[in-house]
Structures are given as structure tokens and as C-alpha cells.
Length: 498
Image (cartoon, rainbow, N blue to C red; front, side, top):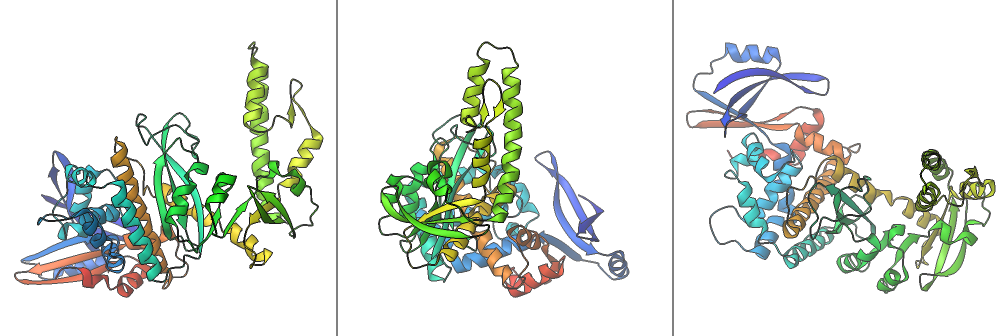
């Protein structure tokens, strides 16, 4: 092994790191890394006596924080109790924690995890894991196992006092390059990759981004048909705030006595949309929709109107140009193709064929609705303003999906069988749950933190071991003031071996 020095950066600061490399399975791999700090610090080290001192530095913050959170949640014990563990090797619960540590630190395939562990604190806790080891453990998880573990985690969250009174529900999906199977199917892809199969999943999270329920399902099943899963897995006394994709008389019937809040599809209720409203005002009425008499709140929002107008005009321009291209193609069925396309984009009454003239009355009608929303609910004991504000916060669950996508907490999926895909998505759900819990813990000390910056802060926390003979010392190497605050408040150093 040959040592060498490199500069690393943390924000505006830079610091020296000494690394050692060797070939692992023929690939040059960093096997040890020691943080030195500034050039002045290097000078002090050189001038001192380092004879017989062994130094080692590991990524520490994320792995240690996951351990700390597991002490509160009891996930490892819950997994082992459900799946069983009878030998001296790594338990199923260990594998789940290792997966979470990796996904929140340096997400990759199961075969990549062994390389990641070399420079991570996890290598001091567990022996190297193999992809085959992961696959063998994943084979042991059944749908019932995963359901019961989710329920234990949900109940644990409730017992710890996390707010489950209002849950925001929505579904999403991630595309995959795998061939079609029991989970990977064609569907309405959120990233517009309609040429690829996808895997779908839902999350029911509170205002603080903490998920109380979530599961995956085949990519060709629309959200409206997955409401059973949501009803079955969410607390009965929680108010459910859901997207229009779940609207149906069948789903409303399934809610039973539960309280819920949703929004009507504007084009299906033109009578409500025609009610005149001043800017940023609301009115109430009642209407029989989805098989029940509902309290209806129609409101106008200037901010919503501005966003929707910008979005609509971008879409309108794109559709208009494409329709013109289709009609001018000279194909014998050009008008038929253009008609189908306009109908799919729901602009067939606004752009008139074959002239491509714009129906001014219809255009005005559409624009006048863009700042309006119509909510339906069975909640009678909250003011209209409170319900409007509650529905506006529905984007909290959408933010959960953005984080999962941006930080690769679930994708890519390196599995090809439906069973392993479901287990992978289950592990990913648990990884996101731990991130949300860590974010809430860090927010109590650093109010400005976000889900993403929480991950960045944890990534800046390393641990350094220095040993001479039988004596060894350990210390936290925090690369920012925020990282030091988190390390000290979570008492992460106490989780490290002496």
C-alpha cells in the first residue's frame, strides 16, 4: 500500500487527507483514510513523534446516527423477532441496518456495499457483507413478515409521541430498465419515462415528513385501486388528506367512520367552479359526491393561480406546436392523430381542428378556474380556513418522494424478481423513515435544517482512531459547526468501540 495526500473540501474550507490504496478484486480501492487538517496541523504532526502510531479514519456520522435511532425504534430486534436468527453470524436485522446506513450515506448495489464498508465505521461493527449474503437474507422476508414489521414501527412511532393525527397520502413510482415482471409494469410514470417499466409505491406521512405507512405495488396499478392498503395500514383516528387520484365512491365507502379531506376534479364540477369568488377568499356549500353528502369548500388563491397559469401556458404552447406539426405532416390520418392527442391532453375543446383556432370562451373558462380549488370533506368540527391550510400542506408528502428520488434511497433497483423487488422497496421505506426521524432530531438543535442538509451534516462527521501499542484513543472529526453540534448532542462517540 502506498500513502498519498489529497485535498478535500467542506463548504469554503479545505483540508488535507492521507489515503492508502490497494487492489481489491483487481480494482484500486481506498482502504484507509486519515484526516490531517490544515498545512499547519501537518507541520505539527511531522515535528512530533509518530513512531509506532497507527491511525485510522472512517466515515462515522450516518452509521452512528442510524445505530442511535435504532436504539429508540428497535428495528433490528423487531426484524430478528419476525424473521428469526439462530446462529452467530450477521442477523437479518443487521443486514437491514447496513442497508439503511449505506442508502443514507453512499447508495449503491448490494455488491457495492462491501466496498463502501471499507472506509465506513460499519466495518468496525460487522464483518464484510456480500451481495449473496444480502440475497439470502432477502429471500426470507415474506409479505406478511414485512407487514408486521411495518405495523411494529408504526406503533412504535405512535408510542414515542410522533404526531399521527393528520396523514398526507400520495403515490409515486420509479422507472427501471428491467424487463416486465410481477412488479415492474408499464404505467403513468411521474418522470414521463413511458417507454420503461416502473415500480409504484405510496407513503402516508405526517407534517414532519415521518411515514406511518407505505408499501410498493405493481407499476400498472393506478393509485385509485390501492386505497385498501392505505385504509388497512394507517391509524383509524388519523385524518387522511389525499390526492385527487384516490377519488372514487368505492374508496370513500371504504373510509367508514374515518375523517378525510380531498379535492374535487374541477372539470367534473363546473357548477362549483362557476361560483364567483373574490381573490383569496372562500365560500362553503354542500353537495352529494362519491356516494355521500359532503361539506364543500371552494376557495381562491392568488399564489396558486400564478403557478397554475405559468404551468398551463407552458403546456398549452407545447401542445399547440405539436398539433400543428401533426396536422402539417401530410399523413392521411393526421387529423385523427391530432384529435387523439388533444383529447389525451384535455385540450380538444380549447384548440379547434382543423383550423387550430383557439376557443376564446373555453380558454377564458379554463384560466378563470386556475386559481380555484374545491375541497370535499366529512370533517365538521374544523373551520374552513383550517381545512384549506391543511390541504395546502399536502405537498409535504410530495417532498418525501422528491428526497427519495434525489438521494437514490430506492432507485436504482438491482433485482429482477417480484419478491426481491418488494423486499428492496421495504428496506428503502425503512431507510427513508430513519432519515425523517434523524431530520426531526437534528431540527431540535438546528432549526434551519432540511432533509437533504441533515444528510450532508451527518456526512461531515468522521471518527479518527490513534493507537500506539495497547493504548488507543478516539475522537470525532467534525467538518462543520453543525456537524459538531449533532455529534455532541447525539453522543455519537459513545457508540464507537474503544
